[in-house]
Image (cartoon, rainbow, N blue to C red):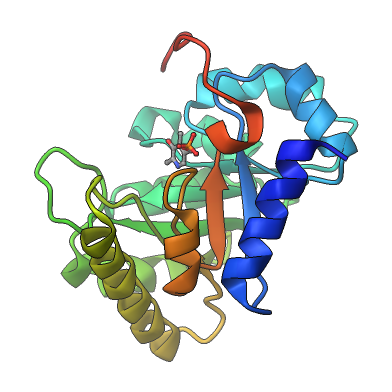
Length: 224
Ligand SMILES: *Cc1c(COP(=O)(O)O)cnc(C)c1O
């Protein structure tokens, strides 16, 4: 088994104290060969930031049963392709995206899994909805048979451990509240290479890890 993968899984398990926590391997900027090598070690879920970068990798790896998560900002003109090629979209942050994703999800495919992205630090520059908007977005997703509401995602602003802990804790509270209204909700996606243990300690059910799994990222390729 891949050493980095082994180490990350052990660190997640230690922080989770027996609770199941999923690892999303963030494969942006990585080649399909690197994804294939990690898949050979048993990793199934991969995260990509750009639809354009993901599509050729997904095509090259079609022989493997992988789960693809879109974790980058979604423009409305990319909804058709995103709904056709991904299993999850973690970055639903405005009402407009919901009917588009529903319309373009093929009737023969399983429903598209969605997370509502929350701007937990209320940063003007960041994507994500305000916490007060979660319930309205969640209700519109839950009303679409081609979509499945799975939970929440957040990327807290960088900060010291106390600040991060407050952001993760507040996300966990919004998650519990959402679960009260939508019992099938099961996913709280938060935590990256530098802060995932803290996120798991505060209730994350899915960590998104790139650098700590694959090593430092090469220079940024083409974007959408
Ligand atoms: C790149 C990225 C990650 C992974 O970041 P690392 O620090 O490399 O682990 C996680 N989530 C999102 C949304 C990202 O864009």
